[in-house]
Length: 168
Image 1 (cartoon, one colour):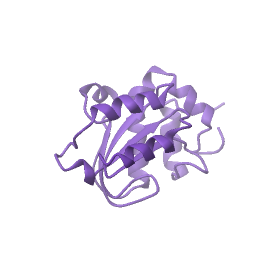
Image 2 (image 1 turned 30 degrees about the vertical axis):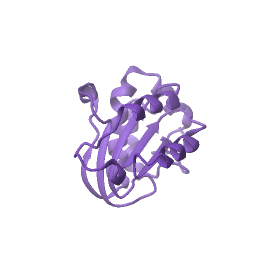
Image 3 (image 1 turned 180 degrees about the vertical axis):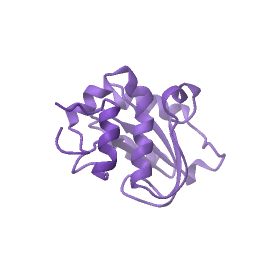
Image 4 (image 1 turned 120 degrees about the vertical axis):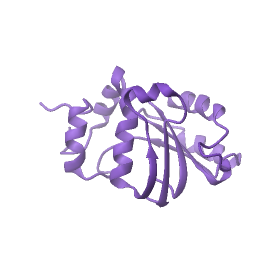
C-alpha cells in the first residue's frame, strides 16, 4: 500500500490473479468513472453475475471529456488476462456495432487492462487509423499519484473491502 486510497501496482496484479477480479473489475471501473467523470449519462458497467450476460463490459455517455473518459459515447472492453494485447485483439475483432445503433465512427472504443501492456499505444493508434471507430484507446489501470486520480477517502474503503488492497 502506498497511501490511503492509492494502490501499489503489485496489489492490482495480485488481485488480477483472483477469481473475483474478472467479475469485480467492471465495478471498480464504474466507481472510478462515477468519481472522476463529468456530465455522465447512462454509465453501464455490469459487475458480479452481470458479467455473464455478454455484450459490452462497459458503456458510457459523457457530456464532458476528462483524462480517461472521452466526451460522447464510449464502449469499454476490460481485461484481467496475462496477455492483454491478445484479449484486446479478440474483443476488437468481434465488435462492429454500438449498443444504441449509432455509427461506430461517432463512438470511442476503449480497451482497459489490469496487466502491463507495453504495446498499448501502438495497438490503439493502429486501430484508430483503420477508421472503424472515432478513436480507439488502450488503458492500463493504475490507481496512484500518477494514474487514475481519485478522491482518496472515497475509494480506500471500497478497495480494501473488495480485496484489491491488503492492510497489515
